Image (cartoon, rainbow, N blue to C red; front, top):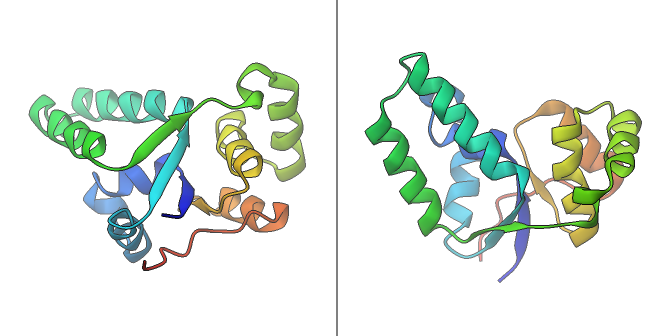
Length: 141
């Protein structure tokens, strides 16, 4: 079973209809045969976006819980990485590729694990290509 790094932009496209895309759908489908890993920050990003969406009336608590249950059932594994305790590395990556430190954390995991990155974020996509890890193609088994 091959693996890839999953960015929150793809994950949240499964939740918000206005962010849905063929790429996000193909990535979700690929989790039938492949596994994803995410930086520890991913769990905070997902929880924060869902909470903000609830506060703004974009969803209710029950829908958030159903989505979290879906995520828990998928082969998605949060991983610690050396960059988690090295802000200098994240700062350097964010400078080099003009990313937020949050996106640099996702890129750092892809680099550390040597895995392609599934993202809908244009800047993170460019960084994945430029760094050599590449972009997940939503491959079939």
